[in-house]
Image (cartoon, rainbow, N blue to C red; front, side, top):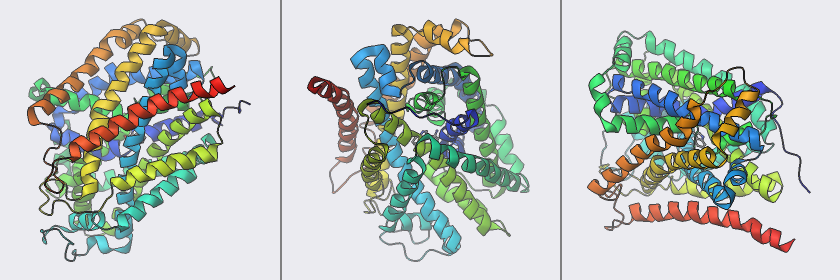
Length: 507
Ligand code: TRP
């Protein structure tokens, strides 16, 4: 018996959920970390070009897929590309599941730091740091390492999984209620941060740095590589999420406009948080480290700690902002995966969600393992953080972009794309032209191949990614995590695709 497919109660609910998925840690900290790493003013130009050339068209593609097929990603891809289309669809979702595992681990640390900020211990000098050689780490940094090197961080990670379960248990209904509360809160908190940042005496220098174009850096491949990866991650493309969310709206929805709204909301939030972070960082003359985690857990909290009044409140507010923004992203993948499993196997939702969370929490705990493997902090410190860094590399640097290429090729050539464009145009107030077909069939697959190829070349030059990570004298971690990633995503995709065949055979 086919269960009735769920629907959003309102168009607003869909827009909030989709932009909630897009706006996340990627907007608040990854963007700023990348912008700094790639020379600030050098970054937002390639970023905007990647948005127009790749981000927006692929979002049209993913929305259009959900609209025309009214199914989750694997089934929708299967309708067009047959068995291999379905395999590609599951592969995308499982790759995104790995991203969700480490993403929730990071949210667990956000919750841990939130708790420390609330209790006031975040600002006190850190006591002896268990196992780490550096007694003189500044407070937030010390607090962070104390957190991730103790088992308490695993508890925080588990709590974040519980929050996720609560938010997706009733599907579109509970998500809609959640995002209606979370999204306005998120914008409000971000505005407070911007106002505080802008009102600091030296804050304005951060803005100059962020927006002074640096045309020389545009010749660097690494900058373009960073911009394309950032656009995919920040817009939730290649996750299979946007297709599932769009499939919960009726066929007559105007998805051309919806994609414009979601990407504009996402990218303006990203620019605004760039303002907040860069002003805070410069007001206190802190040198930002170019890593996301450093930005989130050391640099910004240190900047906040230097405010003479209100730093406690602001610290709590900053971590609440990160948590809310992150949760509205992680739930989107859990829903997309659950939608796919339910569409295919007709299992009960509660059961599906509990299975996903059960497997997910194991992956998140792996990224939170507190064993200290590098007390000198030349690499990452703990085993969990090292695993996190490695799976992030495979799943985000290769996985997401590969999904982008595959969906463009399958939908572009097999549907073919003109049919999808006509379906989008039928209900849209802005019509998309034939140039869209050319982008999807030729331009985007080639453009996305470039960053992938560059990462491969880079890895060949420097050895397996992360060869600095050594466990017990043996360099097994990079290979072990790569094998895990490949087995989980490819093995799982084949399994989930064929499972139905055996079920049908029984019928
Ligand atoms: N777009 C999110 C961000 O910028 C990332 C994201 C989207 C995500 N969907 C997700 C992360 C699902 C984890 C799970 O942060």
